[in-house]
Length: 286
Length: 244
Image (cartoon, rainbow over all chains, first blue to last red; front, top):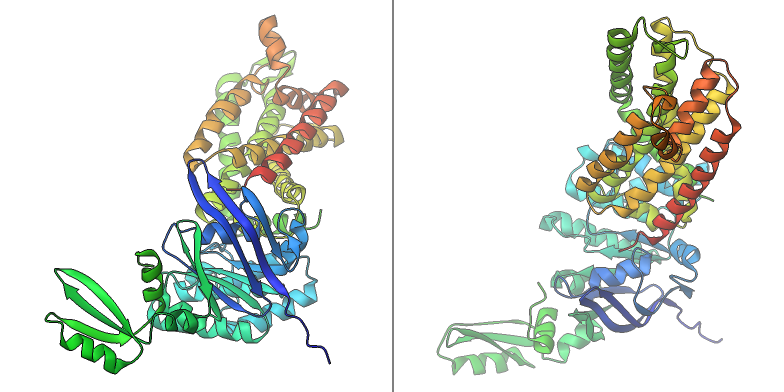
């Protein structure tokens, strides 16, 4: 039996975006497979949000093409928009309205029937653990709850691709982990997830593949473990002449041996994605 | 056109959360005008043989439909710049015309509420006029026109602060010059020609004629209709361009 070829959920072809004098994106090309959890990493201002805004139809690309499940985001925008859900970085719920009303408006915008809206809202509120807050005005919810409501809203119309723009920014570590668990669960239910973040550990924990973006350019793309392994398994941080230097080694023993000849303070730790980013760009992610 | 009802429904839900404040706010302006200009100045005054209060009420209704229709601009700006809910409409699979239709219909609804309050206050003050089909038709057309203009301008402004400029430069001059408080025919000829280009002049003329039991000039409805369509198309274009 022939194996089913993985479908492309997201495709960018030489995408550029210029805001007056600033070139925000400089020819980005990448592909995300159906069902993948793809993390888009980079410091603030690197072009992560701009890419997502083009994909969801909030901004027009200056040149290049973007597709969602094969639909061109500008030429076939209505179909493309049906494919995706979007959770923006800033909270954009109607604070005076209840959780249920916010979700209901979204369902109406996506032309869902009354029965389907009712069922999906009940299901999703249970899914995000806020079934008991359906009638609460959004203004009475905590930051973490509001973020979960936004995720539920983006999932209401059963999108095949979910865009999450810095979904845990500003949340405390415990709530952040709750959101991670929710994101993993959404992926396991079959949704492709395109996530931007500048939290390295978020990408390491969640992503099947990551792409590094710096100053509007795609630096590298690959599986987190492969990218980290390309440097080594262990990192030795040392301080020399008031400058921090990091060395990478295949084994912890090698790192210890190297550290023993260094006079100053040092620490040995596992290589992480931040190391990959710094080694490629000389800059930090966050 | 799918989606317009969701836009309209959202506005109605938000209105419901502050309905008493809104109704009180809509009542203050006409109440002050009736007391100050009606009783204070013109209890015994007549205009073209009509008691001034009977002359004033349709003008106030025209002005109210303009202001209430136009006021959706500030609601849209709050949605756009403060709550950022406008993005929710932009990422939804609806056309710009659906968004504009929902907002404009809400503007017309607000205008109908405002004019309803004025006719109610007039009745309480013992002013009996004829609020017939032609009165309400002119009201709806006027509100439609200004709500469409409001959506267009709301897409063009870049901040809340710009909103006040729109009111100062667009609404306030029209409110005072468009035959609301005085007959346009008393103005110098060249001013009359200029005022003919203001939609509020035609709305006030048509609503006053209908309310006083006269035959409104069909030309007023034609002007309101043409300008309404123009501003509606402009609104759709502005919403489509409102990216970045």
